[in-house]
Image (tube, rainbow over all chains, first blue to last red; front, side, top):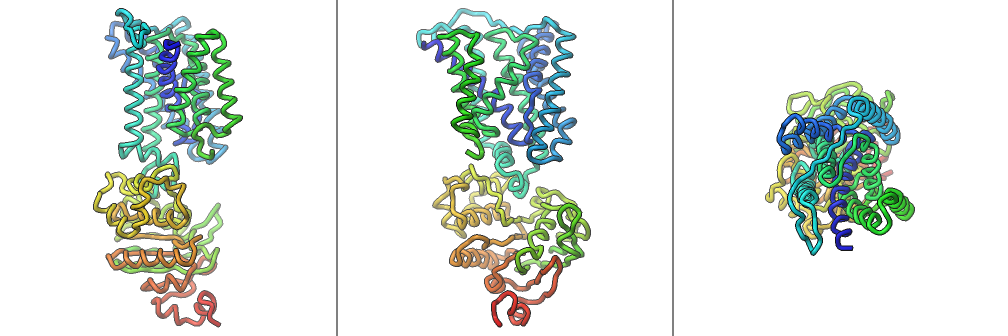
Length: 285
Length: 232
C-alpha cells in the first residue's frame, strides 16, 4: 500500500511534468501538439545510440533532451507559423492536423529504421529503504530529478520575470503585448522547453521501465489526459492532475493489474470532464 | 511628441477611421470626444498597434512607429490602457503591476507611486485581478500602465461602465498624474468630465475630425454644447 502510494507520487510528478510540457504549448500558441510523444521517442533513440557508441550516460541524456528541445524549436519556427496566423477553432484544428502528420512521419521513420530499439537506463546499486519500502536506485534517482524539475518549473513560472511573462501571454495575449512582452519570442522559448520536458520525462521513465520505439502514441495520449483533466492551458492544473492520475495509476496496477490501468485513467479523465467540463483549473471553469 | 497624419484604419479592408490627423505635445492632456461608434477606439487601437494602419503615419518623438508591433510601441515609452483593460485575471494585483514593468523587475519606488495614486490597490495587492470590481480593475489597468514609467499615457474610455462617482474619481487620478507632468491622450464619451481635465480636444464623428480647439473653446462651441453637453 505505502509502496503503491510512493510509486504513485513519483509517477504522478512525472505525469505532471509531462502535462505541463503539453499544456504550456496549448496555452501559449493554441497548439495541441500530437507529435509530443514522438519527440520523446526520438530523444530516447538518441540517448540509446549515444550510449552504445560510448558516450557517458549523462552526456547521452543531455544530447537526447537537447534533440527533443530542438524538435520543439524547429516545429515552432517552421510548420506552426501558418497556425499562428489563424484564430480560435481554426488554429487548434490546424495544429492538430499538422502535428499528427509530424507524428506519423517521425513514428514511421523510427519504426522503419530502428524497429527493435529500446531505451532502458539501468542504474546499479542496492535498493534503499524509504518508509520501510525498498526502492530501486533508478526510481530514486528518477524521483529526485522529477522533484528538482518540478521545483524549478514552479520557481520559473512564479518568481522569474520571464516565467511571469509566459503566464501573462497565456492569460491575455494582448495585455501581455501592452506590457511589452513579445509573444513570438515567448512561444519559441516555451516550445523549446516543452520538447526538453518530454525528453526528460522519457529518460526518467527509462530508469524504471524500458521505453520501446512504439511508445510515442501512448505518451501523447497520457499527456493529453493529464492536460485535459488539469484544464487546457493551466500549469498548476497539469501538475495537480498528474499527481492524482499517478496515484490512481499506481493503485490500480497494484490492486487490479496493469492491463487495465489505461482504461481506469481514461475513465478518470472522462469523469472529470463530465463533472468539470473545463478541467480542474480550466480557464472558463 | 506624438504626430499622427492622415491615418486611416478599420476592419477587413473597410476603413472606419478616415484620414485623421492629430498631435500631442509634451506635457499636454489631449481629449478625443465623440459619440459611440465615431471611430475613437479604432483610431487609438491603430495608433498603438492593435489594428493595422491602412494609410497615414504615426510619429513618436520624431520617428515613425506606424508599422511597429504592440510590444515594440509599448517599449518605446507609450502605455495604452484599452477599454477592454486586458488584465491578467488569475494573477494578483502585485503580479499584474509587476508585469507592467516588463522586461525589468518592478521597482519598489514606482509601485509606491501607483499605490499613492490608488490606495485601493495597495489594500488589495494579494487579490486576483479577475475577482475585483470594474472600478478597481480600471485602477489596476492604469496602475499597470504606469509601472513602465511611460512618457505618454493613452486611455480609451477610462470611465466605461463606471458609476458617476467612480468616473469622477478616475479623472481626479488623471489630474494628479497631469500635475506630475504626464502627457495624456484620452478618448472619452463623458465630455464634461474630460473637458475639465484636458488642455485641448478633438471632436471625432464618422471616423473624421469635425472640430478641434482648446478645452475652453470646445466647451463654448454651440455644436459641442448641443451634441455632447446636453445644453439646448
